[in-house]
Image (cartoon, rainbow, N blue to C red; front, side, top):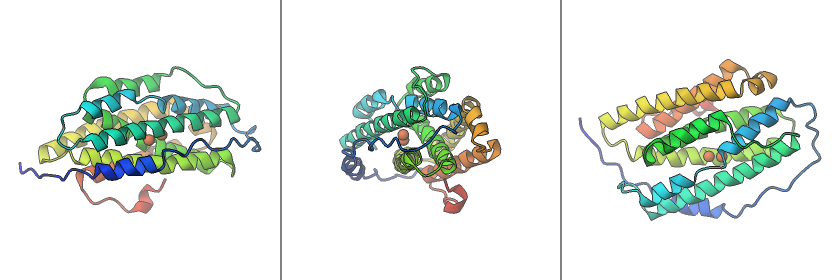
Length: 249
Ligand SMILES: [Fe+2]
Ligand SMILES: [Fe+2]
């Protein structure tokens, strides 16, 4: 099978990109909104995502010690800034949970599953699992935001979606640099579809009450996840990406 050499991504650019927004701080707490009519399942759902956004330390170490040809110091530093950004998301989600009258949680079974997947083996699988989390996050945060009235929580969730979109691009570039042959591409597609399918199932089960209470629609939610995961797959494998409208989040 013919193999192609993919140029190492410009990680210095990503390092600068993450660095440029690393001093944003947290948004000002705005307690003027009335969230009393929202279902308690929403606060619980965001608390689960808050927990998921809190981890990520081991990926930094793996990026720093990786011997992959496509990895360099700029990538490792970009990963470190990416993890900081996810921790900022965790803090913003904690603010959302409190505004909604919910409580933060310390443990959750889906978070433990994602953690298990990320710890399973090396950097490549870890980034693949992170990519699945970005797909779920982009779709879920934007679906929820679209159901909320204008206000702090809605604005913050849309801001998170913007960050997650760039994370998706960042992880896709890394994985794209790994699929240098037809065999590797097929392996990636098989593992990616399995991980994405499993992730979508467990998140849908765990967040079923919110999906029901906010009338997000199980079928709509599923289709959106699958459309986005297909787009991510094409970004990695170099296939033409479907029209942006069909994967609008
Ligand atoms: Fe995030
Ligand atoms: Fe992210």
